Length: 203
Image (cartoon, rainbow, N blue to C red):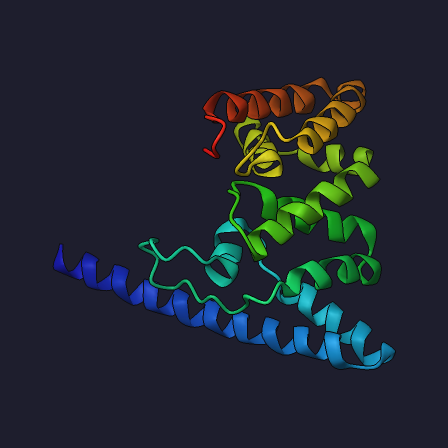
């Protein structure tokens, strides 16, 4: 049991080291993308995208800001709303299919939080309506539980009954239903659950 515990701690330290290295690369390329000329900016954005997390857990360990989390590897590398600027720029620099695939993948299992996590959610709320067919085609490859978790993150927040969120849902649901009922049903279940959990003061 002691060996298992030590091995687990060692593995966590290795994971932390890898994530810190990843975060360092993201910071470097983000700064280059913001301050560089056009040619260097495109190159920096490409490197930033390659270094960008492939799942929400890693994304959160780098960009989350939960002081109460038991995760000792939360890095808080950015608190200056950098992603609000960078994600739209990334979308222009990266091939569409490749970009959507990673963004949706990172959204699986997500949960709302202010600042950089909110930037990811906000970006998803912009890009999914822009290319509903591609978004649905990518989502339908996941298990139902994962699809629901994506939509939960997509609509999550202090006030899921906000008029703008309701408008977004009302616009997307019929369009997605025509493409893939499985994906639209998962979206409906996720959103209905958020509304049921909301007490009017932020759940």
